[in-house]
Length: 88
Image 1 (cartoon, rainbow, N blue to C red):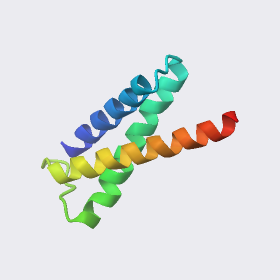
Image 2 (image 1 turned 45 degrees about the vertical axis):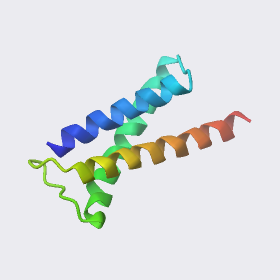
Image 3 (image 1 turned 180 degrees about the vertical axis):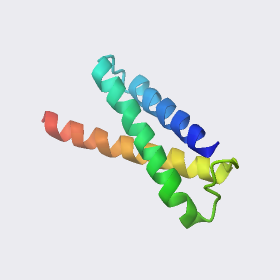
Image 4 (image 1 turned 90 degrees about the horizontal axis):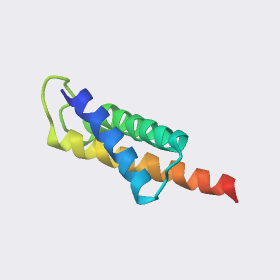
């Protein structure tokens, strides 16, 4: 259950990031969604246990959801900084 939620949260956060930045290029939107998913999966699976939350796939964990969302946001921010650095 957590895995599916992490995927959805990462995708939604990636799309929201594009809406906030007013990005309409489909390639950038797709890559932002992918980066959001990767950030949520990475933080949800690797960082959630460090904070003492459950990572079992059957049990929903609100703490795990928050950690996954935070990881997606951090990775999206990092990718945005890297992309801006290349554009200049």
